[in-house]
Length: 403
Image 1 (cartoon, one colour):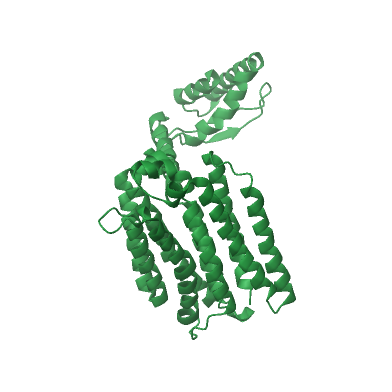
Image 2 (cartoon, rainbow, N blue to C red):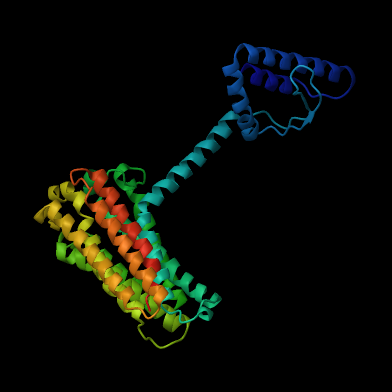
């Protein structure tokens, strides 16, 4: 850092004009560069640090200097300072850097707060259900994409509300089961969480009402009512404490509300057609019925410690992790089995091959990975849980092909 401070001091000492002053500046600059080069040869590690640091220092400084490149016989680098508007202010740069770091940390925490894997799953369910209305390629028009965007945005904010309100009322449980979550770890304060949840709910309702699609409005309202009853801790509610009610909420949301309301929005509000449920629509409801029940049971397997501590009688707490795990695997395999049968009955040979073979591969991957899960390891269970969602993502792309 000696050479860095020397350059800074030389720049601050004077402003250069013409004649002898410029000559003295050049000699001073040569000496500085010569010293820097000698230091670099004597201490190669130090020189490397200076080279890495200097661009950052000059990038972040408040100096309004202009430098002119001239030939340097010893170092090949020489700068002539032309003007200085104000001195370098390290505290201001440090404050700016701290603000940027804080913003980055908050965005990472907010990303985790939203449960991104569920947001991705719901987004793909919207796209998949919207494609059910496509009878020919001409249906995929700018109007189609506008309608798709109308369905995506309000439900994005509803996703944030649903995931957020669950974390607000599960704060103490999550400190045991999921201490890495932003609220449980303290990355996001409780007050900030309340503000995010309330704002997201307001935006979701406001956007759905402004768009004016009744299927979309019913979808948002239904999700709000079901997931509020699922999460909040008031008499007669807090349905997540009752295994059957909790499973019903997840089943109703993923297998009924999402595919039907998104399809109805695109069919009636966007394309102005009468509702006629295609074969792919019926298949998706059956497939997602089995799959969503599997997710509903599986998600509590790694949370058994916290659930037992706070008296939540989940199926895992009642029946044991191993039994529930294999029940879930059976439900997932039944879903893929239904998909294979639906694919084989398709009238198109290409669709028959792609859908039946594709779902068979997905089911095989799940079965193969299930045999290697260690139920005593939360990391192993969590990895398999993420695999479940990834397989569902792929299945969403195959669903619209079944006609």
